[in-house]
Length: 302
Figure (tube, rainbow, N blue to C red):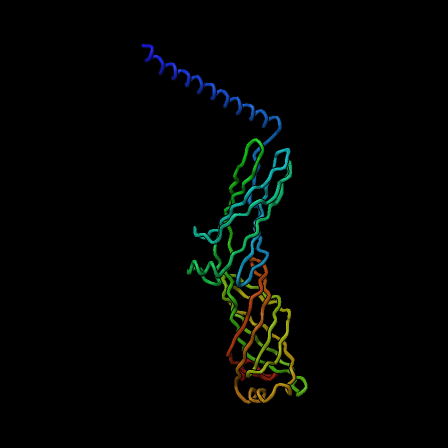
């Protein structure tokens, strides 16, 4: 019987030890709660307050995500890591981690800026159905990891939806060249440039720089300020002034004047406003054909 009593005594000892450990654990938790109440520690909060697009062009879009972080505690708290994911219709476009992003002051709120960059080539290579000129929905998911005294490390998840464009450069067509004054020393002309906006968003033209070649010869270029609104998937016409010296132009000018049309090439850039911010888009055309008109001629006449 004595040998059979020993396991019973062991079981009773383990139960007693278990009860003691539970009491110690409860005491520690109780002390922690009392310290938290006495010192005033609380859980920080965070939210995506805004998303900015400071720069966007044909290759990439730079985004800045503003995280509003509030620290209710009497001491500063360090931000450990920021995990982020950008999705479009459930498909991942970009993800990453930003370590050691600073400190939030005691009893304060601060904006933590998270810079992100979308490379269009990577997006179009991965998802072939995302076409240039389109506007795609996106969702930014952010996890902010914070080290809070007493509480330890906590994670604050947040997300925000928006739209971002995949820009497409406009098509151009030099409809006609209308001469004003003409002399061997200086000739003035007006170029009638047609812009086709192939994007699913409107373009507000601010300025344009260009260079033009006629019959293989450069007749110069300029940078001009123009205000023209071009609707999404629409057209706009811009009149561009040009001055050149025919005596430096060679025989190509006379060949051009004798014919009903002439070959031209053109390249340049346009600065535009869009619903997503300002953009600088390239324009260009090789092997085009245009016609020449006198300044007094009617638009319906050759």
